[in-house]
Length: 280
Image (cartoon, rainbow, N blue to C red; front, side, top):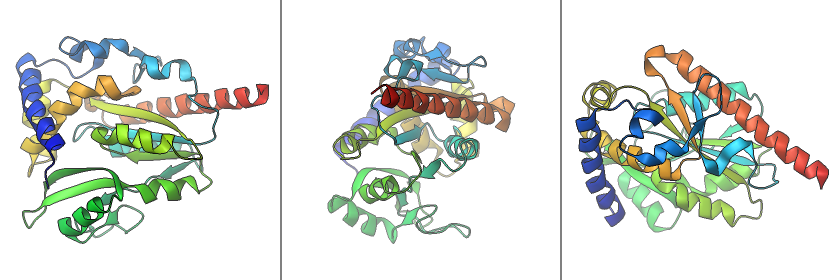
């Protein structure tokens, strides 16, 4: 079921995709700032310029003196979100737990229920869970082989289960459209974890991204993905604490640098938290 909110996002996404393509700017903070001034509020915090921080998260200052941090990673299709999460996990061994999201599509050959996704038996079963209030966020992304919408989302239970585990950093690729609800949910929890929102920018010209990159990466639903990407590029600077810069022409080394810089930033937050607790 397509909600009124999703229809508004689609309408705005169409408009912003056209504006971005027409301007054909470079998809980095400086280039996007020419059309979306909120990108100018970010500043690089590493020598290589692969991690940019907003005033909401400046200087690695912890929001609360807690021992859990939820890192939400979003970005347009093909930006490298999952690779950032995997490399961040490798950079902080033993400290990171993946927040498992859910999908209505069937598992692929190498995927395991509860590890890669929570797999629901088709869109109807997924929608029934939505109607029961089990999800914090959800979105339709493309079509399954039978022509039905593929639904993805974050179950409340996934966060509750992960917070009960020993790892102090919880990481997930989560749709940016659900960040506000997620923030409200964790803010009411007794554990009161902090939240860090990050948005991955695939640095290339806008026309290349929409007309070539997406067509290659998502050939079955590049139009739908492009519309959503238009909305994401427009609203990311209003919602993301950090920007991860993926210089796509540098290959995987770009994401390795970005994930390492993010790991250092996160460690800095926990160092600040420890100092606050010691002072107290």
